[in-house]
Length: 302
Image (cartoon, rainbow, N blue to C red; front, side, top):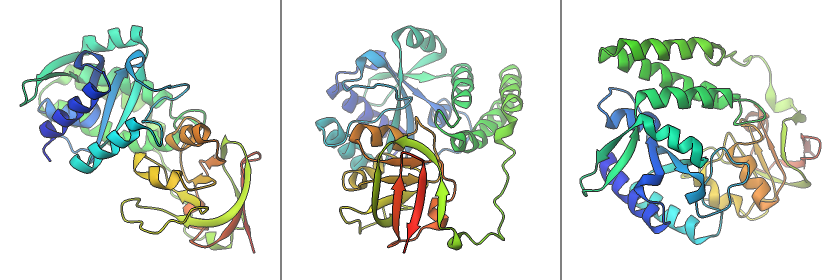
């Protein structure tokens, strides 16, 4: 589905949630593409900023939010996802900050006649500075910074290609400021992770359980997940909702205490350990493990 048609469906969904077009901003890679910049995009994934007071469910501490599991909002979200093959993250923005952010947007007319706010490169620059600063163990996790950096470099090149040199220079300065996200050490190939019996991560939601592992790398291709199996994955997203409803614990390779898995686990009161870096390499389907999310340890049992 073309992005304009996806945005028409998104506008309809937000209208059902009583979020008007004045209360949200379309951001990130697809916003760049929509404004005519030649960049690649993360297929099937949108980023939206919404005035916090307009989001119809409780937000709490989340840096990003999704409809709570087993609510009408969640069901409508999943219907949107099935219809468009797109998912989206919502960044809740306090009203005062939102007023400042919309200064760096333009009105974009959809084929339906509706207009939406689209973030300009200047607004994107400000947003990226905030995002990178929050890519810590206490925030989204360093992996997000590593994942976002290549798209920022593409945006910089797209600005150069369009001859917007002054703005491109500012993007270049941002890349230098957060250059540590470009210097990623590759894990040693000599280490046999199958022999690891115990490893640690970041406590995201406390508790302690034992159970059988199910490693889910692609939620759309995983057909078997029995109730009571412990979910092990790289990172979670709204596509994992069906598993999150049935698992007694979550273990992820990446993320920090405010990542999607952490927020949902606390919401559902299930133990969760994130940022292990190696969970999906150490564990395999059927392994029996003890998840001690009080200490942040995972132990493989015989």
